[in-house]
Length: 124
Length: 107
Image (cartoon, rainbow over all chains, first blue to last red; front, side):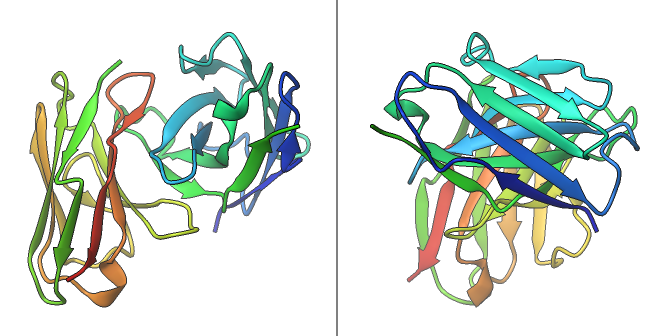
């Protein structure tokens, strides 16, 4: 059973960089040809896709955040990470990491495994 | 970006009721549509993928239909554990986008 766990600071000051890591267990992050994603959800609001990374390191970002986002992967640690620069209060949200299934060359994909989410508050 | 809308935004229903939630895409997305259930304080859970395929372990009272721009999630007989918020999500193109959600609560 694949499990994902987010970790990182819960409080970030405005204009600083938000950094989160997602640790994957129950399977290798580099097997199965999966994408790995970050998604966020402000309190009481809907879900926003931030971006994704393939095991090869190839990335795709949401254009709305592209200038501030970097997603990276460390296959040796079975982790992938999110960096979001120049944060403001609007970046306050629960951040989720998720696996994009079903893997392989499937045309339709979906978020089949999720972390529990971590609340990041941007405040001084 | 493909815009996703859902209706209604909320509904009140009783245990045993049949519930239908609609999702509409701003352009055709074929069958690249997924449904998730989210309970307070929890991560979303995949229910339906590719418009009509039930994810493993999801009760058969959940079903999905539709293609193109119009999709439906149906709960045939609402159970106490089904009170939650439901989101649709398109996987036709990036950026992936979600509907605003439909909150199902107890009448």
